[in-house]
Length: 212
Image 1 (cartoon, helix red, strand yellow):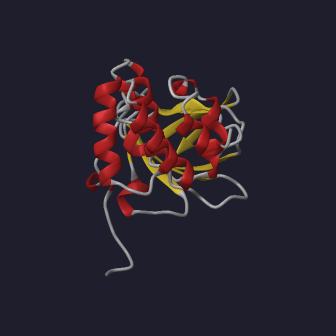
Image 2 (tube, one colour; image 1 turned 60 degrees about the vertical axis):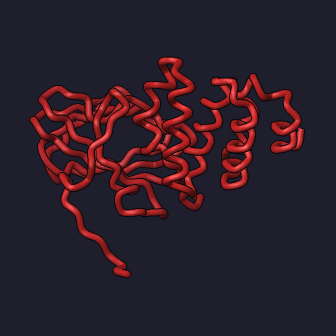
């Protein structure tokens, strides 16, 4: 088995959650020590990076691979032509726009002081619009297929449990939540307060997972 892999950007399938399209570089190569994805603004003015702050989460390094980007970092505008590196700590509000057609950014990130935990959010992204539209049964079916084809991603199992709970599939939701919590201490921390689980919160299986 080869210990290296090579791919051009256009060889990595583009995906989207209805906002900014990107290419899941980490998932494509099976990288498990850090997160990395490529985001492209196809037209001038396109938002490349969705506005967020990573509060309590990842520190991120953005590399302008091609074109020219404009970053907004806590309200400050930063010009970033090809070859620019932009490092952003957790808590800084950030977004970026394409200043030229085809501007591509490479985003690399991980949480400081912790071993990286691949969550599988890249795979869930295309299903998120179904979740937001309240189409929980359809989201559950597609999420189950992804989880079975891509084992080892706790957040994918967690999101599957969320939509199963919302769809009234209580036993399935509890089982997939149990599997997710067994793989991730972070999930054990925030799952008990997630309103998506209101339908199963009083079930013995749910209480057994979290010892309450």
